[in-house]
Image (cartoon, rainbow, N blue to C red; front, side, top):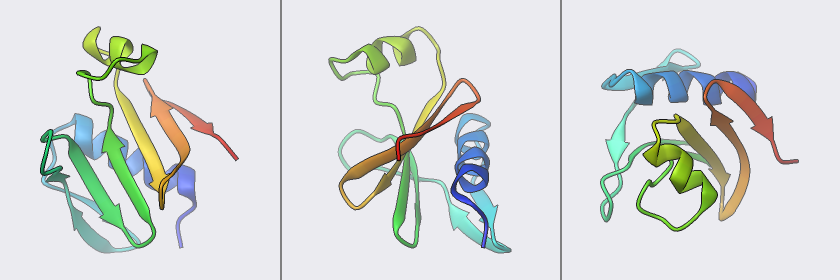
Length: 92
């Protein structure tokens, strides 16, 4: 079982390098798009990884509009981590 940071980095790299899937624990997970906004995302067991929506009203959206690469990690409805321009942030 890969740790959260390692999984998040794999997903982040796959999203921002326009890959079709990411390999986690020797299993392929497709890079999908959210139904409403078309944001690239990955569903993995209890985790949901999604790129930052640049159309929101937040400082994170402003960063994404300027070209920053941001991937969020959610567990249920909780934001538990993110990767911002390659730097992992654990919110635990």
